[in-house]
Length: 213
Image (cartoon, rainbow, N blue to C red; front, side, top):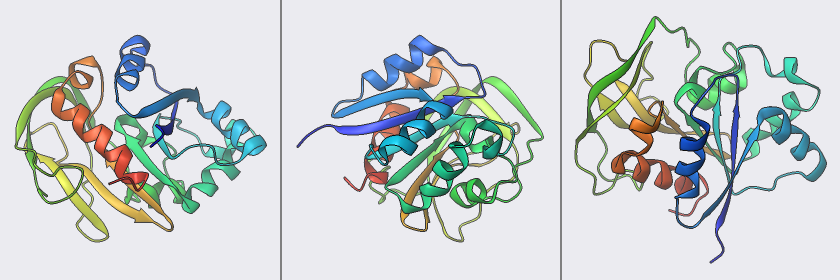
């Protein structure tokens, strides 16, 4: 079986570039192509769908159409699949955009605060899902976001935390038209990226959205 082709979309927020590249280069069975939102959209316009899954690690604050003529059509095409991971600050991208609201499963993504370097006890809510199967609760350091939670309606809640500075629902899956979507609030920096459990969940999340598991 050939490696999965995974597009990793960035922009709108700074991050540890070397650590982030190292994370995606270390995932077995995947060829991951890091690129800006505009590069991905222009590539899509010219070549169409080239990836088995997409990971969005962008945090653009304006509507998609503000970033060039190719971005809005590319974003609207996400409903056709194949599958998408919305990672960490990607949850906060394109606020009030109906497509992004539908993929995340939240219409109000107003953040009340955030806190760095918090120790989080992660609870596995769904032990039978392919992404979390066989995992036990664990502890790791990450940034917290304090905003509303998604409910169980149309979402499969996988991971939660109980922390005064954080929303409780941290990872969930949902169906957006023909696309599988995995939303994962974790993933601020290398403290998290180097965590074995985080890496397992991310790799399985990508495989799940691609329909491999």
